[in-house]
Image (cartoon, rainbow over all chains, first blue to last red; front, top):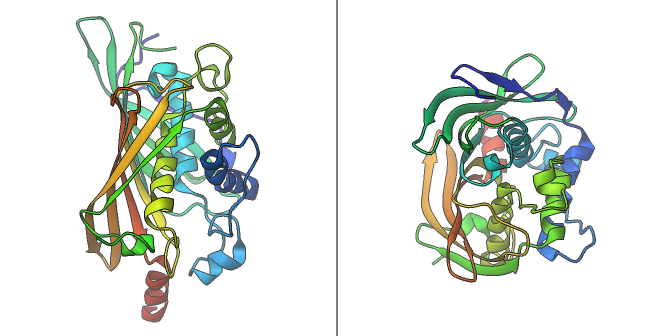
Length: 151
Length: 150
């Protein structure tokens, strides 16, 4: 299936729960240690209310990389594993995401370039929005998809 | 050179790393799981690859060595992720990553630091992912100023 310019894709909405925020906190030390066990880290603004308030926030906020990874997942669902192999992904975190805000990851095809090998290069706007449609993360992506334009 | 203490000390020209590790099955699958990336290319048994977003963890690995005392007096906020993927990163790939602080500037009262990071194959030096990371420093100080101005 090909995806012409103007095509839009969205994930189902997901609440940014406290647990989802903590998963990203814990994964950071876990993958660095690489022991086969979960490794936790000291309090952060992403998992500790008191620490977040001490740093001037009203409460814990999500690590921006969660949004980035939800966008990556959307691109892989649409275009296949090639979206994680070659191309570009840029995301900017323009507003904090607070506990239980409902977030949808989105992508929109800006341009499609078909190469000599029949592969297609997709240029996309990507973003995450809250339940009211306000963008909290914005960016763009380039995906090199095989002939046929992905899934 | 401003390495050796806090990330808030970092200045243009500071070189971070290298760090070396192997992109293990555990690293890739656990990271994918934590981010709800359940696609077969990340979690399947045949030819899985690592999520390219793992390059963000390389920044933390580099910080840990270059800035062992942590963020500094107040929290650091991630502002922008910008990765160019040159090749997929198969599980088992030996990795070498290096970073360099390329910019530090103030804008609208906030202080930004940009770091360029290259994730390469440690076997032959092939560039796998080029990553530009932007963080905001002194988040607490900003919040206090905003509060004082309100």
